[in-house]
Length: 86
Image (cartoon, rainbow, N blue to C red; front, side):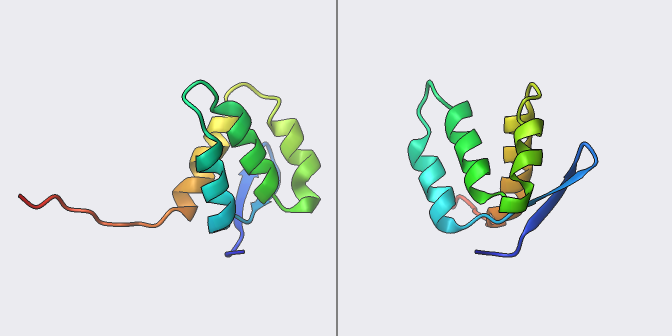
């Protein structure tokens, strides 16, 4: 796994350890009508085992899944410059 991404959420450190395999599995599981369940599963797969209980509490809050997902992926995804050339 890559370097851990540490987020401070509601006063707790949550350590996420995303990998390309976990990220790709998340993308493959997403369906047009189902985004929350794959996102939740992805976060639970990549959170440090010692932080799972704290993550479960945070995930009970409305909107938490997508906000956490966005922040983790913001730091995991490549900063890839793409240019359209005509």
